[in-house]
Structure formats: C-alpha cells, structure tokens
Length: 139
Image: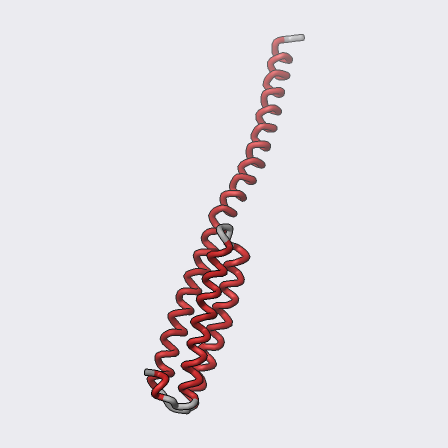
C-alpha cells in the first residue's frame, strides 16, 4: 500500500473515532444537563410554593383584620369572607404540592398543615363571633 492510502485510512479512522466520541460526549452532556435541571428545579419549586404559602397566610391574616375592624354585616364583609375561603383552599393546595415535592422529613409538612388547620379553627371562631356581632369574644 502506498503511503497516501495508509495516511487516508489512518486519518479516516481517527475522524470516525473522534466523531463517535463527540456524539457520545454530546449525549452524556445532555443527560448531565437534564440531571442538573432536575436538581435545580426541585428546590426552586418547593421554595416557590413555601413562599406562596407564606404570602397567602399574610393575605388571610390581613383580610381577617379587615373583617374584624368592619365588624358589621355588609356585602363587603361577605366578600372578604369569600376571599378568605378562596385563599384558604389555595393554601391547602400549596401544602399538598409541598408534601408531594418535598424530599426532606415529611413530618415538617405535616406539622405545617396541622398548625395551619389549628389557626383555621381560631379564624372560624372569629368569623362566627363577627357574624353574631359579639364584640366581647373579639377582644
């Protein structure tokens, strides 16, 4: 065989090996990027839901304060009560999603839900007192 043929075969073989390695590394890079995205997105989704939960609790607290300060039967009070109920359902949904996504100790999420439901009972008593127009219970 001539030198030219040998060189062409060697360069062709090297080119094929490099193309194979390049495709393999591209595939591995894609897998690594997928894993990195999953690792990044998981805590982000959980922290985003926790932030939404915290904001929702603040909205409920503020709305309850407004209900107590109005302290009379009116359509505005009823609108605020509906807003509180909608926000409560939204926060219960957030707790469900947090429970599903959270990879830590599930007891933390259970404690959060229990505390929220205990607070909800107190909130319900306040609403009952407002509806009965019982100022003594509110103080």
